[in-house]
Amino acid sequence: MRNPRLFTDQPLTPGNQVVLKGNVAQHLGRVLRARAGDHIALFSGDGQEFAATVLTVSKREVTVDIGEAATPQTESPVYTALGLCLSKGDRFDWAIQKATELGVGAIAPLQSERVDFSIPPDRMEKRIAHWQQIAISACEQCGRVKVPSITPPQSLVSWVENVSAEQKWVLHCAEDTSASASAVTHGGPRDAALLIGPEGGLTDQEFAAASAEGFQLLQLGPRVLRTETAPAAALSVLSVFWGEMPS
Image (cartoon, rainbow, N blue to C red; front, side):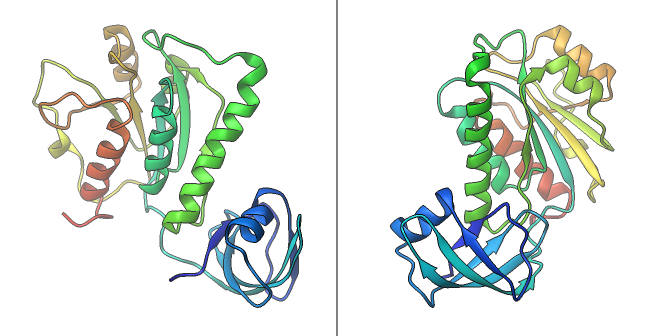
């Protein structure tokens, strides 16, 4: 069984001691029942992972000794910005989790014409923190050492106008079925952008706005994917063409 992996926003330096507090300390002490002498791994999102040894455990704090640093090769060679239209319930949470596991670099929640709800302003900060924690937990589980950023929701048109990437793709059902995953260039670009619409899909005007900003049509077969399934499917297919996953 591998050692537990945990994220902390504190700087980590070999030879130093760090006092973990809050959710990290509670998870170590109460859930994992860590004891002095236990070995764990810590990462702070800078691309490195540190071996650590538990020194003391109390109700609210865990003190650890930071050991050797390593640089796991678990990050995608292509930095992918995902523009994902909002969805209700836990479907958006699920999409964030799976996109993180598949190596996405950043996630932008998007409002579009067919997103039929909004997040109250007084709940926005809490919702973003919730999404960020989902991404952190996914990184802890899958071995990543960089946590995707999650921005406040913005309009789809604003995102497609401002996102910058070597390759841009929009997942969309269209009558022209000639554009498919086979159109993706083999060998990954430095960075990419992927746009995925809401339940009901993008409107013609939204698709046109994306196309005007250089987004190319991407279709993944004859079936219509649910909004929470689409990110995982698209990122997996792109990873194969970019050489990260075996074909």
